[in-house]
Length: 479
Ligand code: 5AD
Ligand code: SF4
Image (cartoon, rainbow, N blue to C red):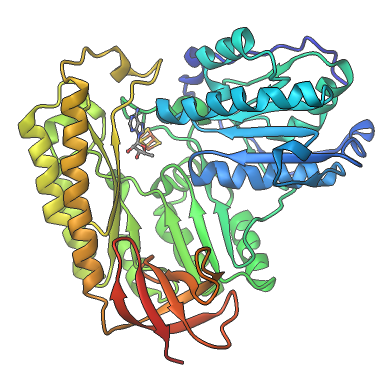
């Protein structure tokens, strides 16, 4: 076992290095060393996940590892022997939530001095945050990052046995580590990583620093995983990557994502989704594959960030607003029933009223079904954080509000079009609010609440849409 005081702190400077070195793909790296094997027997863990789907999927791996160590999972912090927060660093408010939670949970330690606190995920990759945790949050016993989840057994053993703080964060390009344990949280829908990291370095974004370089899993590993999911009854997979369109570039696969998507479609799992797509490398071949296969869902998340070409340039997005619109037009021409969601940042440093107006115009053009809208949040170490910003916060807030009003308008307008139509819904289960009502998502990724008899979780049923709410549709089963 490693000796303690094995402090390995993150460095943003190291994290931004990109070399041409071939990525290592490890198939046999994970092991459960003897003393860690029964560490969890009689103990419970509580795991909370913040942020994006990549974190959700990482948490499935973390849970898989902890279960193999003999832990059981609890949904109640008070019952836990090990509390782990898998964190997000994309905006300051995500970090504040975690820090607030750490403050709240502190009191549990007075009741149970043996309780272990851990923090992992993107915040662990940030120098400033780890320093803050070391200084002001003594309750945190264990910190590890996004590159060394497979080391959790040894690190936790270390922290528990020595009762000393254990910090191990790598700031490196990263490998691809296969065959880690996994406890899938969904019974019918599964996340499948196809690649990790990001090399886009949009000027506002911390992700390329926290998640390393763009690196793809081997196509055979991905296809085998999806085949197994299909064989065990899964109905839907979502292919995950910070930028799935870059799939295979590092493996010299031509037309990587289009090729992969077609191979996945041929496996015949009923539903395939993917996220996130960067507009810059969204190819016409990809559009053709989505159009050709009925099991590739007609719903695309296509972050625009801004509708102004000057702003996009400073953001480092590599496309103009005209190019984005042209991509949108090409997709709609081939996939007329396609729905669109997007991400938009308002109040980027020095954004003018006119530039913001261009963003509103973009929303008018694309009539998004759904938009995740954010006020720009400076991230230490990124180029944008060093830009001077002359836009006052109240202006940013007012822009966000105006944007949200417009987004809501189109969401509602798009939803109205479904009234009287029949959609196919994958049943998630009974609605959380009403146990007479089922809920699930349509192929277009609309949330549908509906009534019907003999409906089972995991079924795909036809639902007639009867009326519309702001963020969902209501209906009844017709078959
Ligand atoms: N401030 C605000 N929003 C951000 N995003 C990424 N970085 C920042 C930031 N510094 C948004 C982008 C991205 C989404 C996941 O989060 O819109 O697409
Ligand atoms: Fe961040 Fe841009 Fe990479 Fe998306 S593409 S993760 S916004 S750097």
